[in-house]
Image (cartoon, rainbow, N blue to C red):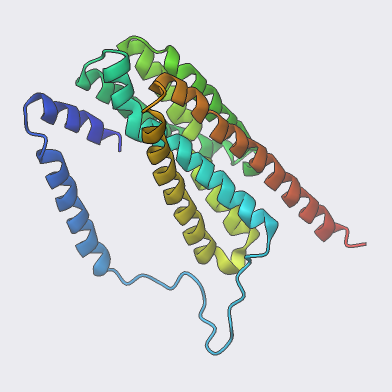
Length: 248
């Protein structure tokens, strides 16, 4: 993710735009062939003859689904519209815009490593709303970027905020529903993809009437609401833990 924008910028500068999708297709084909040869274990034990009752009625599951979908909306604005925003509205070159997007993905990756160390000492449920709030703040700061350096800094901050929202939500949901971990993970990934698609499409529709700087500010609402849902999910988990320790 971090390297692709740089490759795309270099390919566009040389008139070789088709190189990048061809390389991506070849890489995906290679991964497919490797995974097909692996003997992967079953993620959940099978229950022959017994119906599997999924936790669809659990309110906290839908809190997690909402967090991930809202995160996807915000990430899609960064990932799919950053280059358009920086080239069309800020007048930066494709290479500079690609570098800012690379900074976003690199900060996202580095942020996940940092958060992985942080959650050894802090509860993930407390870290999650902080990251979502940071995402919201970064969305408000992106429209202020008017130079290559400012764009890199603003998008790096956005990547840091985005970094571990999805993995932390995935881990918390899996811990909450250990008997349905694989199914819940699939549901959350589906919610993420829906958020990504809805966010990118909505941005395109809004762009017919609004500039992208305004849309980035509006996009801050999604992670702000995700932070609120994360607080609700944490409160639900704390109440459940208290009930477990003191059933009376």
